[in-house]
Image (cartoon, rainbow, N blue to C red; front, side):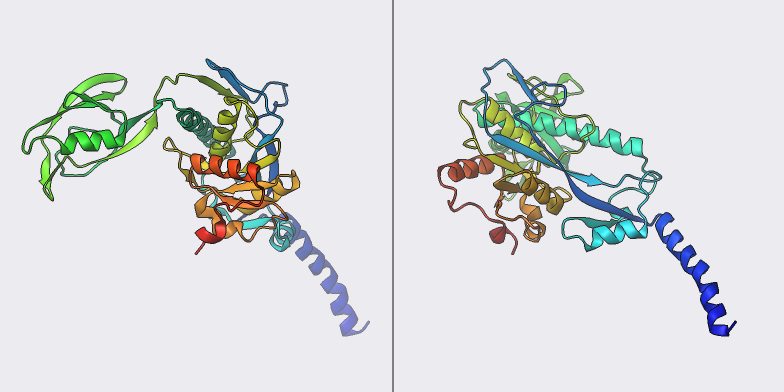
Length: 354
């Protein structure tokens, strides 16, 4: 037996061992693949309407408003991606690979991830309901203290999370109302804030500082949905779907359900994006995979959060139009324009990606 033959024989088990190791040893990466899409105007697996409404008439719709999802490999120890799996998704133009730490905490468990996803889903549904009702003309939001500047007059008096009901005897219903009431206060005079804190109504007195000639108390004012909305909306989505990224599509679906006719003109519109109480559309993960899923589901138009525009332009979207959606209101107007004219000039990701 020659030395070369012997070396070849010895190399075979080593090569096999390397292949086995590559197939079995998990690597610290996470894979993203296109997930299912769900028509929120349709029914769930139990035969229930996904969007159910009480307190206002609802209307059937032959169009589709599709939320999109991504299949993400699970946290450790369940998520075990070997070299071959990672190479497959790395090469694919429809899948993606990310470092584990960019997606999960090192100590995050499958159950923790599920619970966080469920909480985010519930929060997104609440915000989506409020925004849809506000689009219909309901007064459903209220001003809230979003932050207090350290050392400012409000520090130690007002707290983040305080819902502001009135300022100096004037009822307020928006952040602009709060700003107007504070700036209208006499210089150097204390201002009474009536707030709801921990479900209790209380009055707090704050004396503003004068900054650039205007009274200021040093708070950041945001908006949140009122606890009791005038229309009761239930969203019966599969509990296995979590996260906040369906907020925009829930909001459009609720609006469509509460208005006669078809928002989409009987066509299929898909999209993604988080939703806050102001109607602003926020960024999400896996935009390219969601676009692929929507394309395969037959959507003709896809709504993209502004912050995801650059990545969206790299997705294989086929003939499906990509439309930038800054707010729920903007998205609704874009759909209206598209239904009237499929070639209409709509907000584009090209404009928002520079």
